[in-house]
Image (cartoon, rainbow, N blue to C red; front, side, top):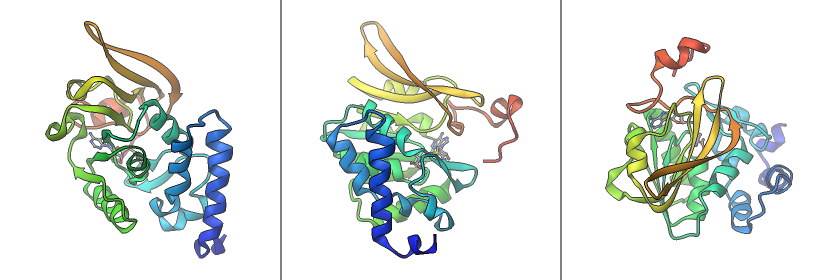
Length: 233
Ligand code: SAH
């Protein structure tokens, strides 16, 4: 596996297998989406010692108890946003910065929020080194959204919420789409929220498993781990 760490063409071959085998074969066929996954070097977003597994069909640890999501889940969440290319997207949960990089290929601009300073810094460094200039990383409580550029036509939360955080609903533009996993440590359901006459409505998509969303409108350490395993993050 060592040569995978040395040979850029080996990564490219792995990446192509990921796109075809994990994303296209499961029914996501939008050419712009597939092109984004062909372009972004996922191995640059995972810890060096795990690079040989960067294109595996699953999540990977990125430190501080957090994970980079499974490629298919990143693709599905991105596709549920229905991006056309001109949007400013708000992402809550930068983590490794990989999903932000994908969103940056599909939209005009990405505002991404991470609560762990070390992760925010690392993601910022990688994104800068790779030359992604339309992505802004901020270290803050993302459950409060980012009012500066609101309203957003697309908002994606990449951590498990207990419920739809009210500030995010308030920052969603009319006609916009908000994708969020909602549930507890036993599992969540991926939801797509939109404005409907008289309020907000959602559709459930598939069961998923994310690390908890913290912060003012997220899970407290006690409530998440009261039923679950002890999580230190
Ligand atoms: N999208 C990421 C995966 C994110 S894992 C990727 O592509 O790698 C979820 C991330 O959400 C973690 O890094 C966690 O620290 C962060 N997070 C949890 N609660 C948050 C909050 N309230 N505000 C911002 N980030 C939060």
